[in-house]
Image 1: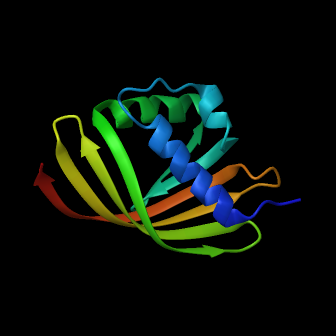
Image 2 (image 1 turned 180 degrees about the horizontal axis):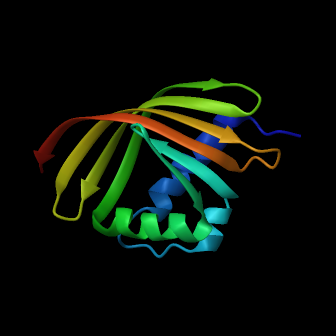
Length: 130
C-alpha cells in the first residue's frame, strides 16, 4: 500500500536536514533509505541520471560547506505517486553566510515509495551575513 506522499516529502526534507551538513558522513545506504537504485535529478533545467554512487559523489561535494538547512513549506500538493512542495529554503554556510531560495520541488515515487525523480526549480532571493 502506498504511503501518504506528504509524509514522504516531509521525510526527505528531514533527511536532508540530517544528512546534508558538512559535519555529517553520508553513505550509499543513507541514500538508499529514500531513493530508488537509479533515478533522475532535474534542477533548474539541468537533468542528471544518477545511481547511489554518483549521487553520493555529488552530495559529498554539495554539503561540504553547509552548516544547516531549514525549510518553510507553504503547501504540499499530492497524488498517488508524486508530491509537489512549495517552499522557502534557507542554507547557512560554514562561513555564516546565508542563502535563501524560493523553491518548487516535485518528487515522484515508485511502488516502494522510493524517489525516482527529484525535480527542483529554485530562485535565490538574497544573500546576507549574520
